[in-house]
Image: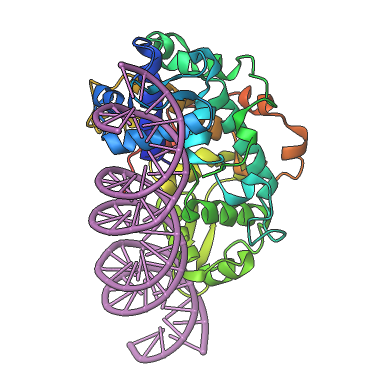
Amino acid sequence: MFRLSKVSDYGIVVLAHLARNPVPASRNAREIAHEVQLPAPMVSKILKSLARQGVLESQRGAQGGYQLARPPEAITVGQMITILEGPMGLTECALGADLCTHEGSCEVQSSWQLINRVISDALQRVTLADLIDPAFDEHLSTDDILNRVRPTRSSSVDERPEPN
Amino acid sequence: MFRLSKVSDYGIVVLAHLARNPVPASRNAREIAHEVQLPAPMVSKILKSLARQGVLESQRGAQGGYQLARPPEAITVGQMITILEGPMGLTECALGADLCTHEGSCEVQSSWQLINRVISDALQRVTLADLIDPAFDEHLSTDDILNRVRPTRSSSVDERPEPN
DNA sequence: CGATATCGGACCAATTTAGTCCTGTAAATA
DNA sequence: TATTTACAGGACTAAATTGGTCCGATATCG
């Protein structure tokens, strides 16, 4: 249905919450889950993924917990989705490899790769800082987003394969 | 997994095939399925949806079949996806209505609506004619797409609710 | 040591998706 | 007008995915 999974959905809500409420610096999974009103085991699972991928820093043991590893400006929606959802790609073949069984006979493969890149780029231009900016949706138009300076492409988390 | 369903995937392949091979004008579902090497009942189902939504014209009875209802330039990827996949929306709340149970407590709802619009707009800027253009992916950059003149927003198929 | 938390899995139930099939109806043709 | 072809509109099933839970291991603090 062209929808993000709950994992990504929740994950972004959690990250936005942490960005918006920077203190206390470190909180445990249970507290965070309670604050965003989402099922605790689910939130815990998501926090683990985010920590593993370096978006969050985790502290084990008593008084442990999670906190943002980078400032909200340095975390893009594209990165969050890629981490939580797996490599972005509207279709199999958009990922580039020989994953599609219709390779060769397919007439639209290369086009999909561009479309995919367009969407991916668009999501890379929106940061966590934007998400928690109350003026974001009111004062920005679609074109404002699209014409932003693009973040450096090569350093992106997206290039890495999904370990999950 | 942030992936289109097979229905949309196949549907776009089928439409691209019809656009690329305009003769014979009308072909039946079985022939089309054979040409694109996809399961016939599936293709038939997809053709029916596309016809119902006015992208294809159908002719019943002997010698019947399907053909494009509009020139490829007048069919956008966004329309195709909306028809085959249902209304676009990365999250529930991006659709606008009070579908999300966290309405009110959610801190990122309005931002999602913008993100959603960005993607939706990007997909509206790519037409079926682009998809079958061999030069499309080679000569166009992301920004070329994003900076295109936008199609008229209000006449879009996307605004209609999904009848399925 | 003992309490607290994350880590990294396995695991299950419910939903969604991919794919099939069947009955009805419209059109062409002999 | 009888027959055949082909779309229309469903219902239906099996497989895959997702949402969600739980557990043993490990790390940290006091």
